[in-house]
Image 1 (cartoon, rainbow, N blue to C red):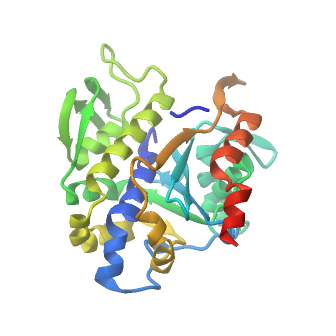
Image 2: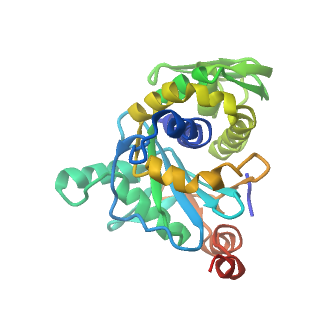
Length: 321
């Protein structure tokens, strides 16, 4: 099993959501005492499932670009309610899925969903992304969080930055996106802007290195950053910043997850640490089909991964009874 724009603009979904779940929202409960508060803009999706007695909570995390037409980061976070183990499955943005009568990259599903909303065929643009991830994994999805990247830098700055060892000089310029990255290598505190640049970086300017595995290398780098964030920022002192972070979250998140849900899951969330979190990538391989580059899911390997990691064992279910 493997563990580990437009380009990369949606990369920030999991990081922002972990900020919400692990660093701030528990403080919001104490500070605001509102059990019916939504942790973002309140959205309901028909494709979501009710949580079963198995004690597993699955949350789909979507990072969307500023136009809402691409979700270049798609991650399924699965929390075991009894052990506090958090398993995260990264789904490459180029994963090939059937949409209607043709194949598309899964990162386009949210944009196609938006078009279907305008036609009156769907209620919300995220519906199609939820449906496709459920088909890929065979897993139920209980909650979703759709995050734009604007709040990411604000949250990182509010929490005082993240100390991180940048592996090499990252130099990249894209005037079309107004994206200019210039990070020096070495251990340093990344403020919001530098953290944003690090998680968006994939390839360098001519003469500067990029990730050998392209987007797959970027996924590994994002996961390393997330681990550093959790190790450094999941602590009691950040509860004092709950109001500030919560306000950022409300401006930048669409979700069906409420503070009431958080209260229900808080015991499990408090067990989560970098030691109880494991990260995986959807099994598969890159292929060129019809001149387009796709990531082709390995169905058999995916089902094996799902059954061994993401589904509760029969013993777990029995112990719950």
